[in-house]
Image 1 (cartoon, rainbow, N blue to C red):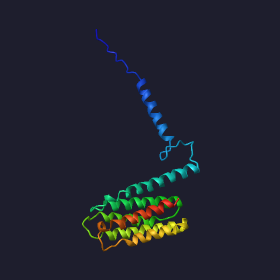
Image 2: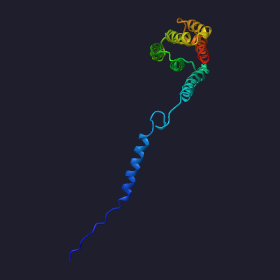
Image 3: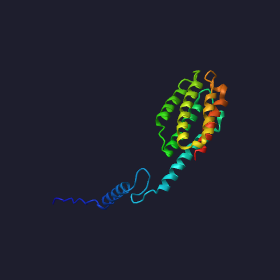
Length: 194
């Protein structure tokens, strides 16, 4: 007699669990706000938003301050000046955003100039690039200061004076103090813009 083979069905419960897991993950990701991690039914109060923005500004300014604290990093590759200027631009940008002052054109121009500083380490025009970038940043800071912080005109004058002191006919490494004076004066002005 012929033998009839009966094939036993595999259990269905692992597939049910897998479908439930996938549905749970889909539900989880669709009910969360992707940018802030806040659930849909929660909202940030204006106080929370201000505290968040202040924390970001302080972080950017702190980053700039801690970076320029070690001016001994200034070397022939000009990475220090490039990074310091980029940190400064970020700090000015965040402060302008907090104060609702449009400085985007000036800051974008300054960002473009900072990229030129490290392109050719053997070039002799680094002081010129640093000074021209510094003047653009000072122009942006002046706009911010006059519109939102008119009582800081003395500090703004120090920034303008320190950028004017950078001599384009002298190599940057021979005038480290002048470049660092510019960095310190901008740090002082930004820290007083509270």
